Image (cartoon, rainbow, N blue to C red; front, top):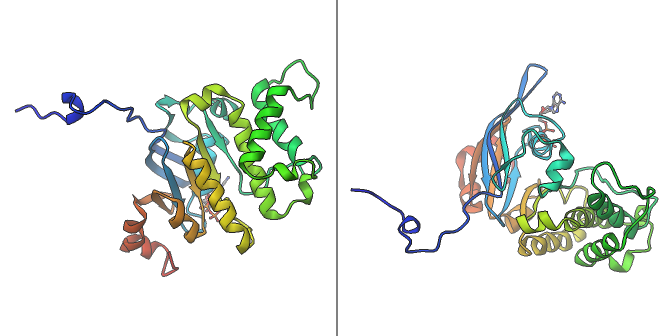
Length: 275
Ligand SMILES: Nc1ncnc2c1ncn2[C@@H]1O[C@H](COP(=O)(O)OP(=O)(O)OP(=O)(O)O)[C@@H](O)[C@H]1O
């Protein structure tokens, strides 16, 4: 007897089941050492998936591979079904893949608005720039940046020098820069943004954590697919729909938060550290 799913029988509407981001057997070897070992993971459209793991597990290396800063030794990376493994970082950004960095990428001497505007204009101009002089900001970039600052509640600080913001403020500006760069591209908005957030809570004062958490929740609720590396377990458990656990470069588990916190192998990997 032929077994067919309800979707194949046409009793439920067909939906786009392509993952927003798919990693297939992704590996990275450097200096004779396997830093990442055949990582296979799918992030669904609009999903928020957190990657956790002890120090040195390979989380940043994984982000570097996905964003195109380093090339994998093996495996493939697909964004909305498109193979981006061979694309340079700026072409991946055009495919809808944006990233924040663990270390602040904010330009401290510029104003908050200028930081966001430059990101938007760079996205609009492409990797080789336009014929306009450096620093030229067009009306579309201004509007996109203003929208990103409003979404990150930085509009009141637009005229401030970015360097004068608190650490939390700088992390918010990083998010605004990411949103401004992505928002400037209608093609990536249509396809759905895939945002890689590298330890957004790193170095944050305790009182600043809830606001940034709420901001990430809002960006996610707006439709973005988010892959987030984060050590702060309260934030991870509060935001993530699924949690992937990396250990010694291999994917130990990937499941809903309740299953991960109960997982004995995961607990063992953390050597008794609280999850
Ligand atoms: N360019 C490199 N050359 C050699 N080894 C590297 C390189 N980059 C990373 N590694 C090693 O790969 C391992 C994983 O590092 P990675 O920074 O990805 O871990 P992580 O999970 O992000 O750690 P943390 O939580 O401390 O940021 C570490 O042992 C690191 O020393």
